[in-house]
Structure formats: structure tokens, C-alpha cells
Length: 144
Image 1 (cartoon, rainbow, N blue to C red):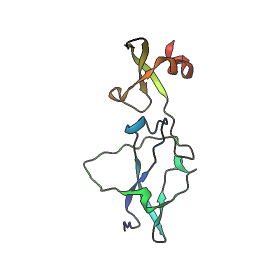
Image 2 (image 1 turned 90 degrees about the vertical axis):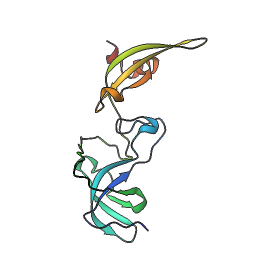
Image 3 (image 1 turned 135 degrees about the vertical axis):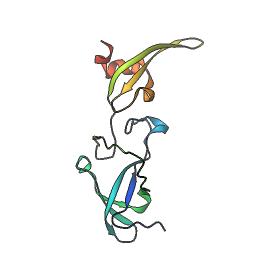
Image 4 (image 1 turned 45 degrees about the vertical axis):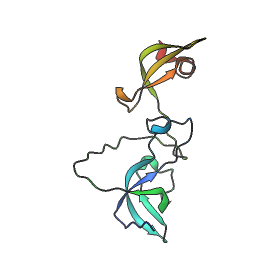
């Protein structure tokens, strides 16, 4: 059985949900774990209390051992902890910053207008292609 100790650092598992953008990634590229967080208390044999940041105060801080993944400290690795607004069910809504490219995908019988969208807290390499007809009603200010 997996066991942690007080003071260990662990990642917290966030279950992916179809169609929901999590932490700046969409679909299969969304992160499965967030963190690392310190363990502050062991509760029973399989539960642990984590030291969560204030931005995650609406989330209960006790988790089952299967929701945790041990973080092996690597001094050469630099982790930036950007403030992320989480809802109570650990869903993060990403906000588009701008449109980088416009393109029309030509299929056999139709044409689909696409836009390459730059999202908040992402680099240009992580921009995604989205359908223009879906983006325009949600974010009309991007198309001005």
C-alpha cells in the first residue's frame, strides 16, 4: 500500500471531464495532477490532509491516498505557481486572449472557418485551433 509522511510533497489528481478545459489544456492534454502540495496530517490509514493555497480554500483538504502522487524533489526543476481560479468541483475555465491566425479548412462538400486562439496562461506554442462559429458567439470581443 502507498504511504506518505507528514512533510512529504505530493501532486493532487484532478479527474478529466470531457469538453472541459482544465488548467490551460484541452482534452487529453489537460493535466491529470496539480501541485505539489505539502502533507500536513495523516488521517487514518488511507487519508491525508494537504496544505492547499488560499485560492483553493473552497475545496475540502482531506484526500484519499489514490488521489495523491508522490513528488520527487528535483532542485534543478523550477516550478511556477500561477494563481488559478478553481471552482468547487476543480474545474478551471480558460479565457482566450487573442486570435493568432484565421484559416478555412476545405472538405469535400463544405468549408469550415477555423481560428488559432491564444489562451490566458499559455505560450504561443500551446495555442489551439477552434471553430470560428463556436468562438464568435462566446467571445465576440476577439473578432473586432
